[in-house]
Each structure stands twice: as C-alpha cells, then as structure tokens.
Length: 275
Ligand SMILES: NC(=O)c1ccc[n+]([C@@H]2O[C@H](COP(=O)([O-])OP(=O)(O)OC[C@H]3O[C@@H](n4cnc5c(N)ncnc54)[C@H](OP(=O)(O)O)[C@@H]3O)[C@@H](O)[C@H]2O)c1
Image (cartoon, rainbow, N blue to C red):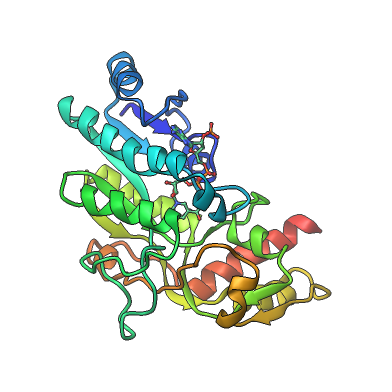
C-alpha cells in the first residue's frame, strides 16, 4: 500500500510517519490544484493522508490575523484534495478537530451527526466548514481533541500546558496519540469513510491534567486555576471546551482506553525520560 502523507513536518504528520515510515512525504501546497494534480500523477498513491493545515503559532490566535492563509490551507486545500483524489478514485483521509463544538451536549457528548455549535475562532470555523463539506463525500475524516503524547513536542497538550501558569478547569475530551494511531490504522485498513471522533472516553480539564503532572512528573511545579470569565485576559479568539461521543468508534469494535489511564501512561513515560 503506497501512502502519500501531506503535512509531514507537523505534529500530526510526525505521528503518522511513525505509523507509516515508508510513506512518501513531498511538500506541496495543498491549495494549489495544479501542484496536487502533478503530485498524484507522479506518485500514484493508494492512500492520501492529509495532516497539512494551518494551526497557528504560537497558537490558533494567529489564524485571526492570517485568515487568507488559514482558509487556503484548511478549506481550499481539502477541497482541492477532494476533487483531485475523486478524479483518480484515490482513498483519502483528512485530519479534523472536535474544536467545532462547545459543551457536553446534555451529558452525552457530541456525535458525528451533531451540527457544529462553536464558531468563536476563525480556526474553528475553518475546520467546521471543511468538515461539513467533506462529510458529504467518501472521505475518512478523523476528529481529535487536544492531542498529547509522551514526547517533548511543543504541540503536545502536556508540553504546551506545562508552560502555562494559569489553566482552565473545564472538562474536555482529549486524544492520546498512540491510541489515535491504533484506531486510525484500523479505519484506514477497512477503508472507512465519513466522520469519526477519535478521543479517549471520559474528560479531563487542562488543570486536572497538570495536577496529575505535579503528582507524577514534577512536585515542585505550580499551577493556578483560570476561570472562563478570565480566559479573554490571555487569549484573543474564543476557545472550544467540549466533550465528544465515542459511541461511533466503539461501534466499530475499536475500544480506546479511558482518558485517566492514557494521561497516567504518558506522564509516567515523561517522568521516566526526565530521570
Ligand atoms: N494539533 C492539534 O491540536 C490538532 C487538533 C485537532 C486537529 N488538528 C488538525 O490536524 C492537522 C495537522 O495539525 P498539526 O498540529 O500537525 O499542525 P502543525 O504542527 O501546525 O503542522 C501543519 C503541517 O501542515 C503543513 N502546511 C501548512 N499549510 C500548508 C499548505 N498550504 N500546503 C501544504 N502543507 C501545509 C505544514 O508544513 P510547513 O511547516 O512546511 O508549512 C506542517 O507540515 C491540521 O489540519 C489541524 O487542524 C490538529
């Protein structure tokens, strides 16, 4: 199976490369139809994985001031891939996000059938727009939330929030990337299409994750609670806080470990690496 991986240098691209080390990974502007077409003609992949997109540096606030670039990569790019892959009957996979929802949907979590209800940042809107178009077509769309692993990658939730002094104490779905990769591999092997939430069951707040970090990794680390009404003191755009349903992925027979267990596993590996 020849895999073409787009966005290889990013956090998710790096992760996919551990799953598919033989993937071909040229850099092409995914919003450029001629370049994408030429690449697909040259490589003739069986599967395309799109882990390319604009996420903003140092965070999604960047997208508020770079709307054209964000739209180009997060909306036009997926549409170009949709058309170019369809022309050649190539199966493809797109990385999406749960950050298009706010809340816990009355305690049940948002399913793949729920309409996005968080439009508070341009980044979230760009992900919701592409996601809502792609769901009409035979594409596998994988939605993750606040991804983390046991690496020092600056994009891992644990690395990111270990640098913040104040943390929100609002529960969220989170995705432990080793579990994500296992689930994604099965869905890709089965050539599944449609939207799939891939998060660990349960929910934790960033504050709770860092409480565990203090217990397991660094007892001298200090943190403060940040309440939602003070969030706008530290960020420009709104942030989604949401819980996603795992019922659909479980209906595939893919069981993902609970979030407490996954966080514990990652933190213990981080603590061991620091010794
Ligand atoms: N990290 C998260 O919290 C998270 C959560 C949910 C979903 N996602 C989604 O997962 C995908 C990857 O996220 P990430 O965290 O890995 O992002 P990332 O670390 O910022 O990496 C983005 C990758 O996309 C490439 N890229 C950007 N614009 C491009 C374009 N127009 N054409 C081709 N490549 C382009 C970048 O390459 P260059 O550096 O060469 O530009 C880089 O390889 C995105 O769609 C994101 O929305 C991420």
